Length: 124
Image 1: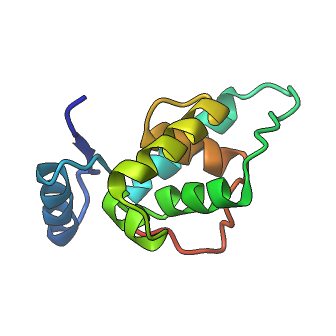
Image 2: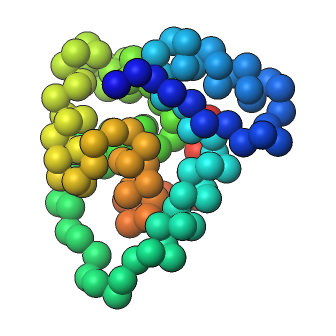
């Protein structure tokens, strides 16, 4: 899938240029406001069903937090001192556990199910 980006039309020029550079670098860019809007929408669509039990390991929780904070795959691999290729398998395992298929869905599920500490600032 080709990288894409979403930026709200009221975004500052600097943010727009950061988004363009990220997409040109092969990343997917979703502006903070957009993710927030999607989370609010998804919460409105939820039923009273019991929240799923994901059983993430502590390391998987750290990777989820890194994705939600906006780190790139390269940054995550660097943070955990592994090669980017070695980092891909655990991320795909996390995708399977959470039932998601990309980083945006992972971030939305993580925020929606309080899998990350919301007091931590989100990096964009």
